[in-house]
Length: 441
Ligand SMILES: Cc1cc2nc3c(=O)[nH]c(=O)nc-3n(C[C@H](O)[C@H](O)[C@H](O)COP(=O)(O)OP(=O)(O)OC[C@H]3O[C@@H](n4cnc5c(N)ncnc54)[C@H](O)[C@@H]3O)c2cc1C
Image 1 (cartoon, helix red, strand yellow):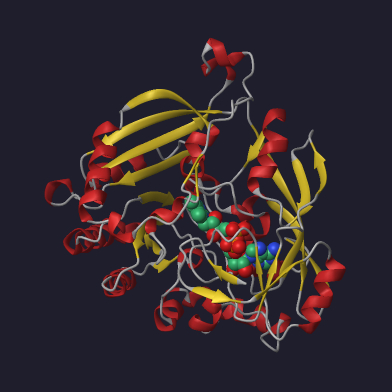
Image 2 (cartoon, rainbow, N blue to C red):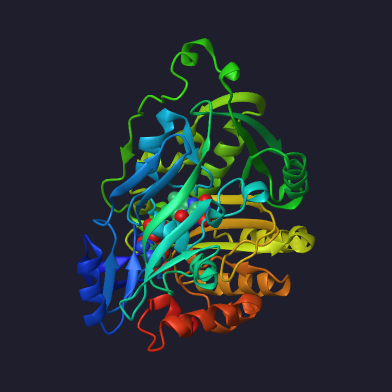
């Protein structure tokens, strides 16, 4: 079947196996010459693609246990974050770490070691996982935790499926009093103000900024910064106090077909960005339900189709704290000058991170979406040079085109440790994705 990541670039054809249990999976793995696991296909580029065989966890998605006293879930790796929230929020439990979409699988969340708006305080997805089992190419199932096969446990976080197929996972949820977030919004006139707003919100659990990346001059980096905490019962308005853990379902929109790619041009992106900035309301104590706060894009199904059939590329980099301001300024200047604006540009603050190929490092991360066109890759190469110059790196789960030299340099500190584990588990290099082949992983 034809497959791509969320960005629609690149596309490939592969045999897709939808297994339901480990017996079926083991048979497929023994027959395949090479393979890679795939969850919900929400990684943007080619990390869940392989020209030969893709093992989909979409039907490997049963809940095995839910301890509603302790907030511990055990499930198969194809269960999605949306399904976890569906069974847990009404009982006062929520995800400790969540990315900006809930339509990702638990296996995908581990393989990318996803981060949320609280990385500066709570770390990445690895921080909530107690243990998992992993099917490795020999057909053996290995149990992994901080005390058992710890090297395989840590290498699998951010390991992009290259250590094996994650099977059953046990993870911890956090207790919440309500399904709402108390949000403070700040309008920042430029990048300096935006970074100062993050600094002021350092002790607040969640923070994120939307950046107008076409603004320039004194307004370069102007942003809407949002900070939030889970709302306690007494912060709720009277009408929702009676049912604090229930959020009324909202109507969802859908983009029914691919829009023509000419629709997204400098003018439409500029107009959208200006509207977003000027419409945004600064203020404190705004009550927002968890869906609107964490997953605004999930309310429009297939929103990726607005970029047209050619697709788009997301570019997400992180820069060390000391270099963040200068590096981000250079990146925004390059983008603004190129006129290739991003509809969505998101800035977040990361805290310290230990790991093998996990993406975060202490500093700022910027994520940008660009429609695919003939001028795009030369712009992205210029951005790579800036990221490299300031000792940053690019997020593998968003990548579709980085070159192997830049990858090896930017992940050099952890790469050999990761490759040692991979070689031990997969001596014949059967676990492969288009991305791992491109990057020489
Ligand atoms: C709108 C949107 C917002 C996002 N926001 C964020 C964000 O804020 N923070 C963030 O960190 N990420 C974010 N992402 C990226 C997303 O969280 C990751 O790409 C995630 O890994 C996708 O999970 P998936 O189930 O779709 O995995 P896929 O895209 O199918 O696969 C991703 C990787 O996981 C591996 N994999 C999947 N399942 C398994 C398994 N069972 N065993 C072994 N390997 C497996 C695949 O081989 C591949 O390498 C966002 C994506 C979208 C579309």
